[in-house]
Image (cartoon, rainbow over all chains, first blue to last red; front, side, top):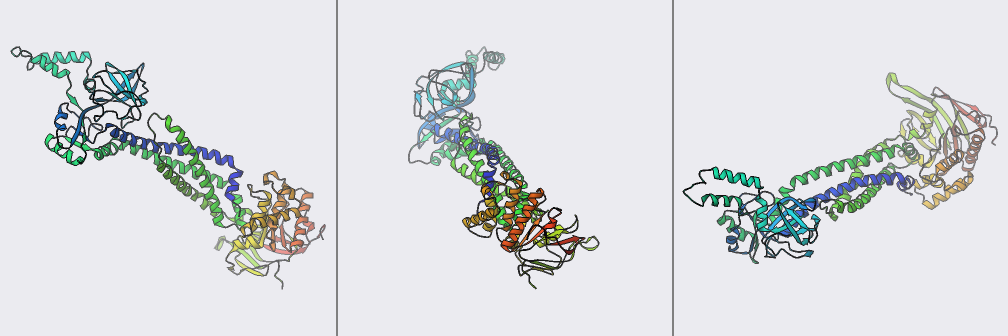
Length: 399
Length: 236
């Protein structure tokens, strides 16, 4: 038996190919949307991986340092360092801001790390070019996604930083490239006010009789000094000794230091479950809408193609063609349209993914699921046309 | 009484119920023997199409009997179970327009029927080619319908109607779109095929040009048929 669907497709290949391309672009958008979600999850995972920490010690009852602001004293790390099971502890600050680069600026996550301690938690684990930060001020290690090159000068707040090292795929959970600078500079940048604001604050402090007491010399200067400095960091990153579990190390810190401590699993839960949950739902909604639109397009195209063949279907039924032969012909055409659409969609998504400003991660399982969904949509979409074709009265061929 | 070919007895068809019922066919009797070509003539609304649909096993008659090639098809409400297979194997159709499948070439348009009946592809195609040769369109065997002239399309359609060697062929205005010469050629082909394949052929027509070619003609008016001898000119 010849393939009626195959012959029809070959006869009207242009219609099928162009419809398939149109559908494919829609499927490509759908696959890319799934890739955007995967990219967000991967960004979150990369952020945790790149920190090199086993535990994140943050301000009590906060979801810091990534999902909420957190502030802990910058000398806290010393007491944590001597807790049982702690191998390393290091301060870290995280600040998402616009970083100046030449005439332009780029959105980046500025990470403050303790200068001169390579390998400590928070440090970039690998560089693709240059060296780690060795000086206490005005050096930076930037991710390639920031568009920086070695020797470039970045402007953060009022200070300028020379790029001495480059990283790859060191990004925040939002996909913003990371820029590592010395901790002291980051602390300053985090709370730095403009000159007018500093002047106004000094005036207010001087006008406050509680701070400006002539009988207590040096009090006013001390208060002003405390207002201009920043002795806080966002988190203390902890690496634990082999043989200890996260819970064994975290529990004493929680109990005795009255701080919140997250291990890797909890931090992943915060980043993926809370920080990108809304975005994930948003993308999920888009996927549902795109799936419905794809289904509507396939249904409409197959319906139109079937309507064009009503007389031929009546003739086929009159001359004794089985209903299942006609149904299979329509179903095959729908599936072929879906396969063409998926191939076009997969190719377009693969080529388009690197062009997106944020990381788009196309994983094989999504492609497989997408292919299954496309076939399912095609089957469902052809139901209306099949029902219509099976209702065609063979008498229509006679008139 | 022979029931080779097709025979109908007291065939009636009623549409609707009660006061709105319309009796489209009233006790129609007809017999067409194998190898015979008869005309079925009547004005619009006379019941021609209804009769053709009943003969083609497309709609069920309300009452009466129909015997096709010695097999009872309908008998006062009873009917054979698989009408689709009956249409495929026992009845050939030739329409006013060829209604060829546009995405199949001439050979496959003809070969489709035996393929549907389970004949292997190669054998079905050979059977189709033989018929196309008999109808003198073998040189267009691989052309799509859109590439064929009106006359060639009609000959391919006739080949499709004959390919399963059905005992009955129903032709609905087969010459309507053709000029006089081609119309007579088509009727000639049908007469030739009727003789060669022992098929009973019923030609529904309005075409004045071909009416004189029938030896027997059934007139139908208001659902009632009556038979008259035709002139039978041109074909022996």
